Image (cartoon, rainbow, N blue to C red):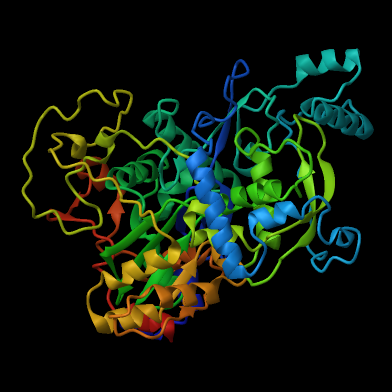
Length: 595
């Protein structure tokens, strides 16, 4: 510890960070990189697998319920009017009554205050394998061949003789990862897999546990090989830091550890909660971490570097729901072009909506309009551009505080038996005696071959899925902090709120959180101040950065799990002591970070 006080941070990062891979797992994206990097790769967490014939569903979870019921529609309109009253903009019925001739339409071709933002169209992914350069072919012929191949992938016609040549020579890529997988034409022979949804494994009747695990391994292995250039043969020289959101359950964490230590062949690994990593990433020790991700918002309080499980809250909405609400708002106001935008079967449309949300949505009073270029992506055709006026751009982000406006899609949860686990990865439960039974391998998941002794003789435990709150962001933050119990800690936490995740970059969000949390505190509580702290780094990457710091400072201590120990003993390490999340960490590293 004396060494940590005296060493230069850059020297420590250079010494310990070159062989530490930090993996921050999210629902929509995965952030992964070496601990010595300034920022990680931020890659959509998905893979497209080629199918022998065009599937009925080009997206694995396409059959999910995305229809808004009549009751939900009424509640959404009421939420809109409530928000409109707060923001001092017209209500829905007032807007529609005046919409026979769009307001301020002259601004469409006029000066656009936001024209510095680039509305760039995306292109469909070339789904064919690259041809090796032939010594007999000229450069111009190679370029021409590639262009024609691209035209074929886009569904554009070409001459009969070249088409016959292509069918014999060109092959489809078997797997396509990341953003390229999201930009595949719906008519292509691919099925898109998203192994994680809403902060959990995306297990459903269409997506088996075994397939989820195989997809996780395939995506992570591709990133390590193609992005970080760490081949399988060299991974025993590296250690991995798993930074996991609080939404994941014990069994899910164990499965991911097995992927890291057994399938990906890292020499050792450690797991840290995302909230804990966030306080380290910003040089704090006590804070209320509010992580607004793409599909889930999670809240947890930490005191002196220790997570307080009683304060944990999960909200089933995030940035993608704001993007979907943005589309609904524009359609309701009849400002969206007459194009077929379908984010369920065309993930490219969701990419476009996310970019529009990031560029134009902000929270402030008054009417917030902007002129933007909207793109249409029809099956395999080049993108079409449509210049339009987007309106009410301050309404959809307010859905964080009025979740009935967002109407999240309904995702089927994993089977309840999935949550049965006798040993909590993050809580002090290993001294508790549980009844055991020998028939836990009851064939629910016969295709899994984990080969670990810890799966034997599972005991009976009550089903314990993570509880999701049905309240807005301000109420959830207030409830989380008040659950900690001590008035001195509560006051400190209310003045140490930390917003992380991509949505935290939304303009005007911080003052609204401060105001609404202050009003949500009951009048009988002796608390009169709320403050959201500015993030020292990009809120999108703060947990990843904190994971890198944790790995460097805590490297080699007993929290780490080694490859051989995991294979033979599961989470039972050394003298029967289990892995715990933050209890091995002391206050001195906090002093090092803040210095």
